[in-house]
Length: 225
Image (cartoon, rainbow, N blue to C red; front, side, top):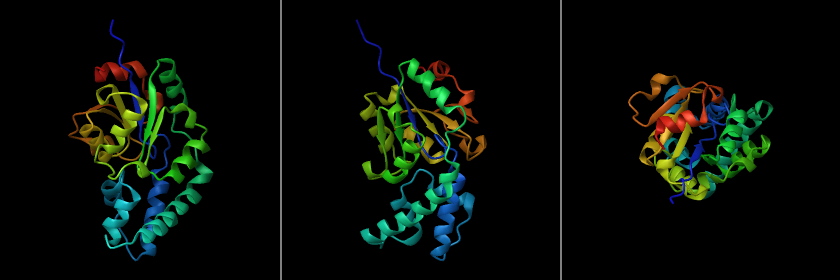
């Protein structure tokens, strides 16, 4: 008798579990302006969402930075973000009810994010959600950020599920591409970009404004997993 394969939902964090990308963008743009740079906001988001801070700093400030430079700049930017977003920290619409439904259905849940540990702690502990997740993978756990599939594959491995039995929740094209490379279906939350920004992806099974529009079993039926 064959057992049923374990199923998983793998959530990106920023812009997905929390509708916070405007605050991340504000903090990044403020940081860049302090460095004498003025990137165009929409182009900056599309080029950087899902990438690690190290990758973003190298792309915009140069790859000559020392380890100490990266650590100092990263902490400066993330401190700006946490200061801006702390008064507004809240779960995305419908998230808690959706996660409760997934839990009742026996679906394992994991987080796969480009965020550093301090921001993971800030969000998951601030919302009292850490216990909901069988696995957490962040920027410190992988060498490459999205669109590389590393963080999604690691989250699935840690959750004890296979990629083909995992569904990713994302808000950025780079994240959807990372899921595609990982062999995973994706659900897009249009918290940050409109649906048109995701044209051309063949691994998207649903799009929604928030989690209140989604049904656990319908998603797995659409993904045929």
